[in-house]
Length: 486
Image 1 (tube, rainbow, N blue to C red):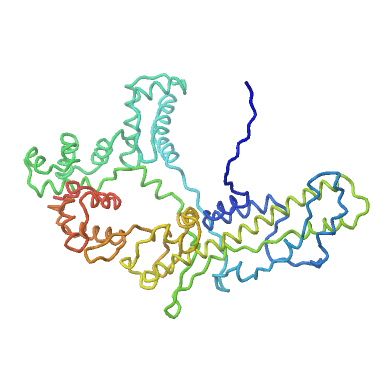
Image 2 (image 1 turned 180 degrees about the vertical axis):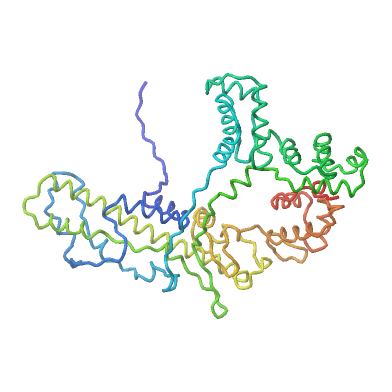
């Protein structure tokens, strides 16, 4: 049975302009420039650079369009006030910035196109004498190597895959033989199926020596004991002294556990970080500036203004002309929205970073991380009167240039902890102290988490053992047993 009823509810929705502003706020400088270029290409009514108006602004009034035929379309009932696009009361100094000296030159940075890791391996195969079938199998094996240099698949799986996807019918013995050829390629250890095989492949290419021979025996016979650092068991198993074991372990530690990673890292294009803000110290005072690339000069196209003037002056207004004017109106509105969104972006970035700068004033003046105060997103949101999500968008992807280096803004945010003197300190400082304690420990007898907690307590930071473990993991520091050195 179908029924009709009324349902009254209250909902909150974001306008398209608000969504556009939020998207622009979260973009760093380089991504913002790309977005700006896209908008300039998509909207012909939007132009960059300083505007040179030729038509007086007072000629464009809302009543000039009273002769629009309202019966043609409802959308023509809306007046188009070009003054909104021509006359901007906001002074230029609020929307522009110049952080570059006059003698700076724009230099292009040519980027080299390196040979890929897999292509280099294929090129090395040309030095081996292989028939067509062996060549196809070898190229398939190279294609199965991941970026770290490992083959993570079993030989039976690869045999089946070659048969079903490549039409290559072979057996496991043949694939194993071709895999030995892959193991001869550079870098040493490439094509290994696990860490143990990777390290052994590198050791077997070294000059035979006593330390190398002992290292091979350790990896082949007692890999688990070695990985868990049971040094006493290793010395007893092979009947060697601690000095001999130390030399063998030193040989293993110099090996590369990710042979492919070293190649790709050397050919990876270095990413340039463009700071969104700059903080300077002038006469003992902090000065904040927004990167000038975040404050472009935008205006409405003069050609579109002339088209509106032509339509106003014409006596006979055809339907095609009305359609053109409606298209122009849509583009003008879009241009105005985008210009307003950029201004809101600039204001939001400046007011947020200004609040962060003053909140962490002691740090920015001295550069001592111990001066960093506990600060969470809500602290800054309350200061500037913005939503926490907006502050998060500013902090997560923006960089600031300081006298102490270029920093990611979100690194200044941390939780607080009250020490034994009742002072609130940042967890950043606690992690720094923890790292220093671990770096200075005796590696023959590394400190466990309970001992670290006792030392921190003596320094005025009464922290539980589980919290120590959390901070240690955040610092990417292993447990005490894995830090032990012979």
